[in-house]
Amino acid sequence: MFRRTFWFTAGAAAGVWATTKVNRKIKQLTPESLAAQAANKAIEAGHRLKDFALDVREGMAQREAELGEVLGLDADPELPSPRRVAALENRNDPQYSKNPTYVERSTYSRNRNEDH
Image (cartoon, rainbow, N blue to C red):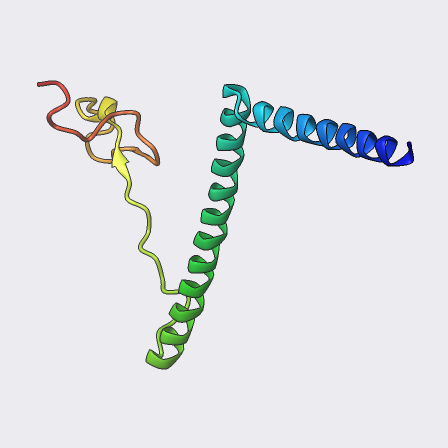
């Protein structure tokens, strides 16, 4: 009697376990679940790529500093002064013909092909 009860219980437990495993696997294979898994892997790959890029950038900066030290280059070279453009409104005005006013950032394009 105890033997039959033991095997019945063991069989029922194995059936519940197998059913649970199959249901989990079925849920993993639904389109929504597969899309979520792919998105998670893509995000993880993006983080790895970002970490790699940061490591490369850090190594580049370190190597550049080493080369600058060995070659005796200044870390802060003098930059040229910013270019200034005479405002186009002042081009034909006699008041400004001798001393045109300069504008730091002109709204006019320097592209000659823009109007053609």
